[in-house]
Every structure is written in structure tokens, then in C-alpha cells.
Length: 315
Ligand code: TUI
Image 1 (cartoon, protein in one colour):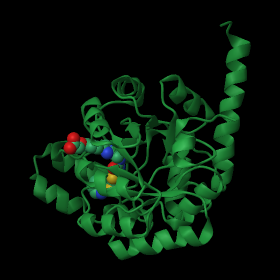
Image 2 (cartoon, rainbow, N blue to C red; image 1 turned 180 degrees about the vertical axis):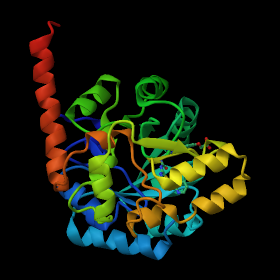
Image 3 (cartoon, rainbow, N blue to C red; image 1 turned 90 degrees about the vertical axis):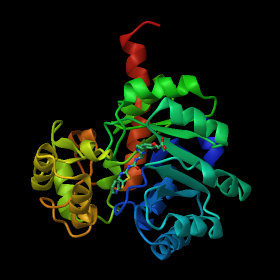
């Protein structure tokens, strides 16, 4: 049993959150993770509010345990999605790609726990002052939209800067990473890439195959020139995009080129022309298995690692 303030705050058994990945984390996956004792999170991405509502209802039909919704703050449907979260009294909201400060009072008023994803100490301090319940400090080992600091330097600096609980994300895939995160001062972890290969994850099997085949150096970052760096599996599209950035193609044109690519990969299974967003840990994901097996493996692995440390070192 490894319990933390995160378990009490969120009313969950294990301090493991499943990343709210756009086009990936549907109600099926979120329900499976929550039912397994972690926190499943629906990824609303740039989806319209009625899609988010139906995924919330899917989770509620499958589990009575707490779950979350991730809100991508660059979504064109942001206000409507926030309203659905309020109407449905979603237990937990995580946010990404921006500052959710102005939404905190309304969410807190109905008892929704607010846990923004941050990539810097400055935003962490601002959000603690705004009254959020916890933070997810996400290193740039993560897939998708990322900051510029890696998990090892980021997490302890955020932990030292705030009093609220911190959850580590980015580069965590097993019990070793879980334990490392706790050593850095985190009280829980969020994992995305490994849950992409959960049986309950509804993405194209072609994407799962790409993750399983990936090695340690198979991701690439594009979009730095647009101000929105994104980590994906290196493919035809990332190479074309990188060349255009090098050639100085205007930002507006690059953004147009990137639109719809995540769906193209995750839903349509176009693994060469779509954005196969994935963390650097893709190389360490080796099998497709139920979400519950992933949660159990991380917890069991962490306990084994504690034993190993005690055998290997004298404290
Ligand atoms: O949000 C993510 N990862 C994502 S979102 C996404 S969907 C997407 N679609 C099209 C273009 C781009 C993305 C795919 N992956 N992770 C959480 C995260 N948030 N990582 C980094 C940040 C972040 C970055 C800057 C949070 C706040 C921030 O600064 C805001 C401020 O105002 O200071």
C-alpha cells in the first residue's frame, strides 16, 4: 500500500493518474483506469462539448468511482466544455496548454478538484495562489504539447515552490519511475503513453503497434518555431514539418498544416501522415494489457524496487 495526500484528495486507491490524451483517452479508457483504483481522465482536446458530455456519461455508466476530464485550454470549445463539466459535476478537472486561473472559483464552488498541468515554477506559484488543489508537473519527456524542462529538474523545483501536492508526469512508465517520482517529492504520477497500449484504449491498433515497436530515440519535437512544441513519434509528417520550420515557413501556414493530424493518426490510423503523439517512454512499452494490469504492475514494481534498494544499499 503506497498512499499519499493525492489518494485522500481524489478519493482513489492508488496515486496513479491516466493522462487525459486528446482523441485517445475516451470514456472507455477513463472508466477502466478509475475502476482499477487509479484516476481515469477523459481527454477533451479540441472536441465539442456534446462529445465531452457523452464520454462523461459513458464513464458514469461504467463506474461509480471518481474520474476526471482534461481540458485543453487552447480548445475552440473551451467555454462550452467548462459548462458541461460544471453541469455534470465532474469530480476532477486537469488542464493543459495554458493558465486555467479564471475558471478556478466556479469549479471549486461545486467541489470539483482542480489540478492544472504545469511546465514551470512560475505558473505553479501563480496557480497555488489561485487556489488549485494540486499540480501535475510535466517534464518535456512527455508526448504531445510540452514545456522545455525535463521531469528530473522540474518536479523538485515545483515541489519546493508550493505547499499543495505535486504529481509528476513525463517519462514515467513503471514502478521504477513511480518510485523515482516519489523521491523527487511528488505524491503521485500521471502516465500517458503506457495507457495508450491499454486494451481499453480505443485508438487505432496501428498506433499501438508503432508504440510497441518504438525504441528510446524514436520521438521528435516539432513546432518550437510556432511557440507550441509537440513531441511525436518521428514519421513522414514530423520530418516534413521540421523541414518547413527550417525553411522559415510562416507560423500560420505551419499551424494550418498541423490541424487535424492527431485525429488522422489516433482515429484513422495514418501513422505516417498523422501526429503520433507519444512520450520518450514509448521504447519501454512492451505489451498491450488491461488498464488494471498496468496499475497493478506499477504498484507492484514500486514495492519490488523498495526491497531492491534495501538489499543493495545500507541506509
Ligand atoms: O496539454 C498537454 N499536452 C497536450 S495538449 C494536446 S492537444 C493539442 N492540439 C493541437 C496543438 C497542440 C496541442 C496534446 N498534448 N500537456 C500539458 C501541458 N501544459 N504541457 C505543457 C503545458 C503548459 C505550457 C505552457 C501549461 C501552461 C503553459 O503556460 C501557460 C501560461 O500562461 O503561462
